[in-house]
Image 1 (spheres, helix red, strand yellow):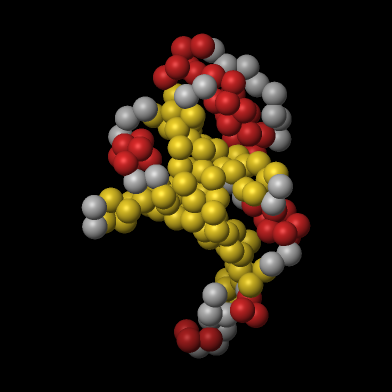
Image 2 (cartoon, helix red, strand yellow):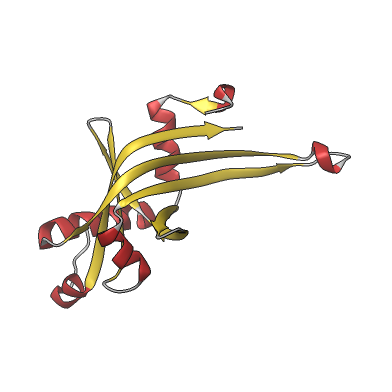
Length: 155
């Protein structure tokens, strides 16, 4: 990170930020193109390892790329506040962001899908106990992102 004075290394502060946000952006490499998609997410933090979960259709570009190019970049940002000034070049902003690299996998096992979906629902609703219809569990794609690298910065 170029601006080490903005780096956040406190693990509690990083997790508190991730716990409060709602949108994770996944960046795929697609045969010379970059494809970025925003998703709602849930996460687990166990043994100093992050695992993110999100869901989608069992079709489309995100689904196909997760199978063929599972190493992805990701980003979460928030706490944005414009800092106004008298001249254009003196404007700035406060923010916080987390970026990283990880490997995506598709969850096929019913019990693990339920864990992933409940983790996602907890992030959104703060309730981690839900029931799901069998048909929905069969038709939804649940993605698991195992994080290899993560960094956080703020201004």
